[in-house]
Length: 544
Image (cartoon, rainbow, N blue to C red; front, side, top):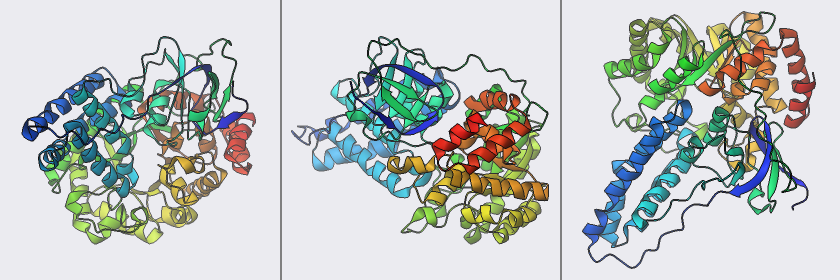
């Protein structure tokens, strides 16, 4: 048995222990030889294989709900992508290579392009690799790599998990998840929380760890070997979560519990979960495959489908968070040496104000048609001047409430001035952490720096909370930090007035807030902010 312990980033709370099952690595790279006798017949095998894979994923999506269903549907569409199939077919006929090799190379080209783009697009690389392996396995008539059949409850250990694999896990058989790569905002993290499975990511060296059984602490991020003969300990989830559907502390201090959505399926799942509204509607999800800018009517129809489940309830719509790191073809972005620091978010609108104005026109129309209480906010705002520019255009479009996202440290440091220019702010902790610590949120090697419990990040949030109190205006959090029930209390104690998260976390966060007074939350916040490390912040908040 291995001695000592390993540590990573706890991304889904709870503690469990049991035997280790390691997940198979990606499929072996297919050979380029022998070449096919009939390249055209060989190329013709690719589309049916891709369609078969897509159909299986769609069937999985149909039996799933919430985040899992959305991610599986997206992965199915990627498997049946005509561009991927076409490129692979062309490689077969032009280079006379086997179909499996052609799919491997075509998918590699797509993955490289996504990785180079960064941001949201880079998050899709693992999806492409998963689709690649499934299509190749279908072509070769072999079992695709992934989670093996589990005969008994086990702890899964992997380099990383494909979203489709994570979404289809059986919580009754999976005690916990441990991955060597990934980060706090990865699909593995989001889905593990959704399923109530303790999870630790970015555990460097875990694949070489020779323990037969381990204990996993999803709160502290510690993974340690245990006696293989010890009794299996299932996740300590604490049973069903009770919550009356109103976000507030035990003494009546209101903190709205909202949901993050990007598509109609997300909105329905959020409404079913009891969310009081939407704190982040990511509109760019409607445009990722668009070659041309959608018309105002097309945009309006897409928005109405998301807004309708929240008639009479608050919905905050984020304008396009697009640009060089989330390239949309119709924006014709320039090549940039460092896209994450380039023209993205509201900066795109400075150069193309017509795109923003048409989107605002569509949002206003959708708000009227759906009956939702709509506000609008801009991403990637850095200064009060930018905030004022955006607010003026929003009001000119007939939308009453304008806000901005606090994702850039400069905006947090000048939150008082920013709030003077707008009606509300929402803190995007994913990007705020990334920019504060100069740590790519998709890079496992620096995942610990993107831990939302980092005191440096909490101190910036505290500045925003103080500015919100001083101006009497709302300040929400819509990053994954909001989905942590214990951190939710800390955020409330820092002055945050709403929390927005994935649908599966809504009830747990609502119940956590209801179980503490505002004074309890403020004590936890003070203890966490004063801590020297993220681990100490967790411990201090728990004991406060």
